[in-house]
Length: 258
Image (spheres, rainbow, N blue to C red):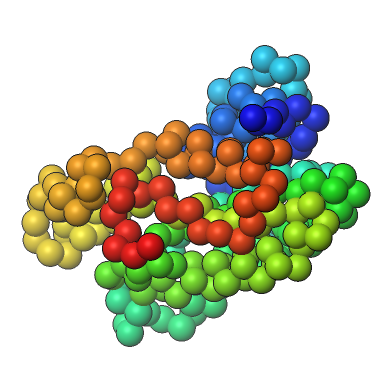
């Protein structure tokens, strides 16, 4: 099975921590040269030091804030020659859809859809020229079954999933695949924030909220960022060339649908 990414360049969003960082490390293990993309330059430099270079790669960082698309445009103007895009950024804050401020929907749409579109359009020339492109969006199992109390996130993640499916149909002819990875409850800073918010709102302990979540997972444990990263990395390999336009849950079996 051909899983080598030697000679390929990957741009990984939200890669200063969590699933994004884990995906970057996995891509580097497969031989890819990785550029870490996030807004915190200090954290990016720390993460950069953790990337393996056994294949002689040259890794780098790119600083941009997805809440400001202009900063992303400026960064991409300096470097957009990538074969792989891992489209990943922090999720919207929790809360019911009916109480969310309309501005929250607009802000989330800019971060997740508009910035995704900017990235794809900037990287397409290199992907088309190479007849090789991999776009993987890290979104959420909410595209299959909405998650309670994540109204804005449920809405925007679904928009990203349908945008990706549309792109998959348009770009497959150029050797470019577009897929979505859907993490379930995974040990990340965002999950900790969501659990903490739920505990405070419900008056329960953090342990009680965590135990309730784990009980809903057939695997009876939370996922690890590295487990999500493994799925992301495989979809980027030559071996996955005929996998296009799909949603891949990595959730221990929790999603209640096919």
